[in-house]
Amino acid sequence: MEGHKSSENAYILGNHPEELARLDRQAAAIDRPTRLLLQAAGLAPGASVVDLGTGLGHVAQIAGELVGPTGSVLGIDRSAEVRQSDAVIVLPTVVGAWRYTPAAS
Image 1 (cartoon, one colour):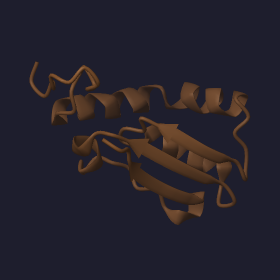
Image 2 (cartoon, helix red, strand yellow):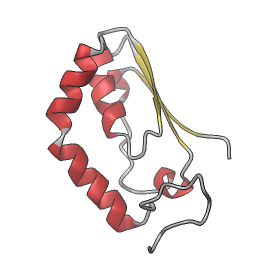
Image 3 (tube, one colour):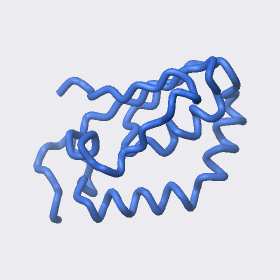
């Protein structure tokens, strides 16, 4: 599979542009249920969130909207391809303290 790495820890579907585009479409399709799940889990203004394996940042963006400017969201992803992608969502400071942090290799 193109974009597939041999490492046993690699994301099996790869991080090539076509897969990132698929993830983007998927996130759009499940935005509302994702938001409802995060609300049901208790995300509220002022909360602190860590999104492990944040990918392009879709869930982190929703979390940021829910925790507001008094909360914080830390997105962590180990994929250099994802972190360097133009598709990565950079949250405005209005949704709190957003940091996109590469995981240790």
